[in-house]
Length: 223
View 1 (cartoon, rainbow, N blue to C red):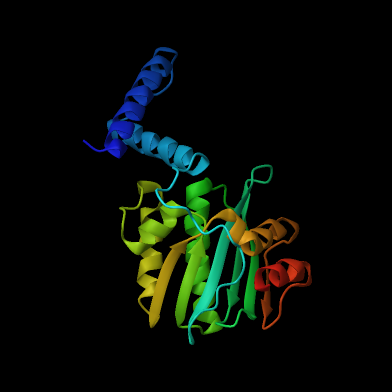
View 2 (tube, helix red, strand yellow):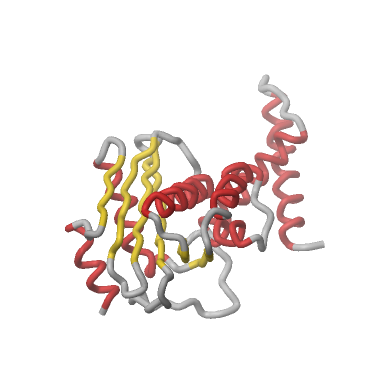
């Protein structure tokens, strides 16, 4: 029996115990399907907050690593604004030389959890990359769960299964794509764009230029 299944069984048992106690106080009894869904959500949030230590040492150097022509790199990140019950999306597209091709900062009125927000930004990034007309793309995210789901190495959790399925369908239109996991330090530009979205009403895009507030970060990565 795998560790993931054991963790799910233990969490589901706790949810059943909690639900039974709530029922005694007058709350509505949850179905077994609802309890399993709740258990998966708890595990997803825990794993995002406490990522497992990798068996290999991740590349901690945030500097730009040149790509082969005609590949483009798309870094993505999400920010959760709990006080507003909204999320921010950050996407930056660079060519094989590291030049900024396009950037997106978008504010969405969606009260999503960490995993759902990261899945949403991946979907938005794929659409944005298509609109910018790049067709050979390496997407980089610091969400290992979303990266693995889009690479097909794990089955998506129930809460993001539909959006991951839609993203995979859109990816089929590209000539070549890859999804890679990077640590937060190597994803600072996209993270800054996601945080920037809190101060805008809908979205802002930059085409063939770097947002002025990102220039120090972009310059540091290129060194």
